[in-house]
Length: 198
Image (cartoon, rainbow, N blue to C red):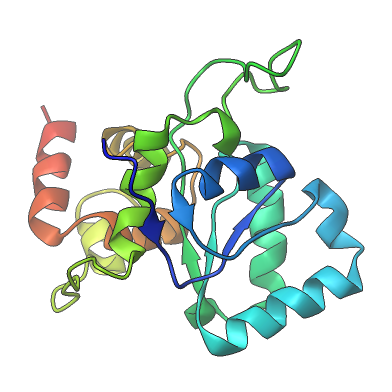
């Protein structure tokens, strides 16, 4: 990996200052924090986030744990869907170096991710990234036909599919669909579904 930073024109929202430092280590970008659950009470922070999304969509990159999901859901409650880009870090067991104990769920947060992981997540949104075609997106009908929604084992199948794309388990069908349409294309999706059936 080179030392050249990505140039990201989208604002990026993370949870804390160490997450922010991790992003700024690999990207030139506007990175703001929610101060953990502080965003739930801070009218100033909400106003800032709303103002940022008037110009361009906001990248949300919270930790892939319950707290991160709650914060992500809260942001989505006051920002229009078309102004949000949801990115997810993989669920990796471990503990950040600066902490004396692992998190409640025992997984690494944004700050604990290797630089290569963060670069791979953000590279599609860098100024020199090739435009991604969305002519043939993965749809809710695909999910239903492939047993990923509306079926007896849909939750388990979605979790297995999520793992293939380094996404966290426990995502709703809508959240997983959104993430897959950002990360991959229909061909790769279909190949991944085939692996689930083996």
